[in-house]
Image 1 (cartoon, rainbow, N blue to C red):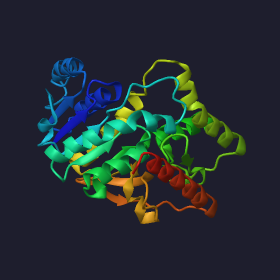
Image 2: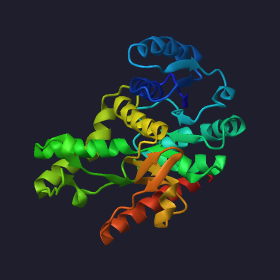
Image 3: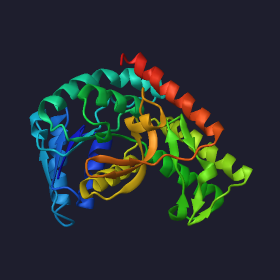
Length: 306
């Protein structure tokens, strides 16, 4: 099992590659980046870092032909993050122009069974576009969305004082500002978890304000560690056919009637990508929220020319 990483010199691509290597779940990781010297430096460093923990090899991909034997591709390619970016629509205009040339190369060199994971934002838009341009099975296309759920569980743990590891929760819909946090279906262990109004308001504020707090730090970078851990979990489940259930952006939202977009839904991941979409039980109010999110994502896809 081999993983190719586009953007292997960047914070997100490199962090994910490192997390995957620590999990020792693939035979080889191939790093590519327009900053080839930085990618080469990561190859040198990771090649030694993985020796005490497993068998994963790391190599430099100088061009897309190196990905011809890869089973999974992570596309972490994106324009440098800016503190002036305030929403996903701005990120769309910044990143959309790099997608078509990437897809042309992937279609030329990669196996049509390759699973493609996308992390660039707006990820729901790009998952849809990648699938349309490559034309492979929808189950093979995934976008990073699980970190929204991690942050929800973190916020609930902060508001309630309960253990993070015992909280069951999920975000669906758009990755980022349009995420729908399903408070009404949360659990603690095997028991339904009902928050007080004050606790839910606190958790909601923590989630809603998180991105603003990050950009206020003016680091000029996107997040790396939370996203890297999340995507390494996804990659491990695909590589090992592990049946992990995790929210991901998927074009298989067409199973809920949304056939002109991709969006975050809980899915079961294994060999070949998505094995099953876990359709959440939604109140009429939540369904209407999801309809609005789908319309928003579809509009952005149309704005991008797809």
